[in-house]
Image 1: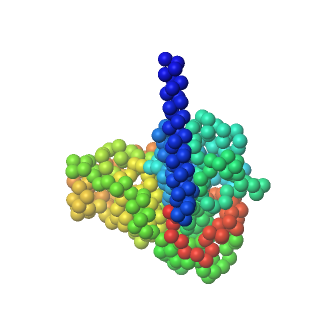
Image 2: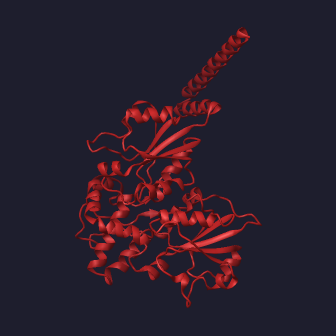
Image 3: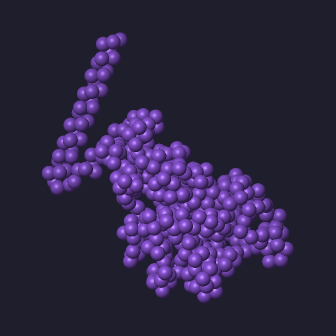
Length: 422
């Protein structure tokens, strides 16, 4: 038995040696023909590892004011492995390194866990990858690679937060999604509040249109803005990006289709939780997202903060959502119900307004009359206004936070128009 085991082990070693020789020969042959072999080497490495176990990759972040840029980063990270483990930085670490977070850890955990490309989440992750934590990732969480975007991530002393992972040869980089950041979104809200208080009637309708349609920044818009001031959204949606975020699957003929609509501005934990409950009521969740013009007419000229396409991608990235209607009508009509074969229309108890409770001009009159409308209890008492009030309450702290990152942000945004990252 022992001799058989030794023979088997020797056989495996020979096969491994032959495989290495073949790989080296192929790489050498390609290089002779002028073909770069680095990609081949990485592919062979991944293939060998996958023969034994799934490749697990790790990505961390603050994920404060989580937006479609965060989601796209997680999507790209997931493509580099078979399982994506995400570390969510603690409130204390964020405060020490960047300033106070807008959303507390438990809300950020809800947001990250709801992203369709995330397999596992680690709470209270450190802001910097220390030697001890890196070893814990490799040994306890079985992580193969640590992932981060191509934007700099510097500690207060100016050092690279991912220096250790890079030196260990276990670091992989993805492309940053240009055109949005949490700092930018906070800046948008601060600018909206500032402009609203100075000139409610004239400036805000213009400002909202510029946010919604991606107009470029101009000095006349906010001549008094500090270096930490916001820029206007430059996001340019493409059909390719929408496909990347979509499930690519429609409902089955016998599916129970649940419909919920809204602005979903500044997509937050309250939105995620009501979508989770709505999805549990059927087999397929269809989400209607109102146009910028509709939101502005119903919520005020300073809304929405995020434009229609930005809001659509944030909702599409949620694992509880199967499909979205980009630019859904305000009223749920008989035609909409018939066209999409909707079985149930739902609405949460926590909302920006009580339109769903009105006797006159109720946008849900048709589904109510058909007996397919249901109000479900919202798990969290959070709205878009809640998030904005947090910013306003801590105006000075968030202004300093924005100024702290202003120089690095300008490198990506100033005088440019972007199509979001790969």
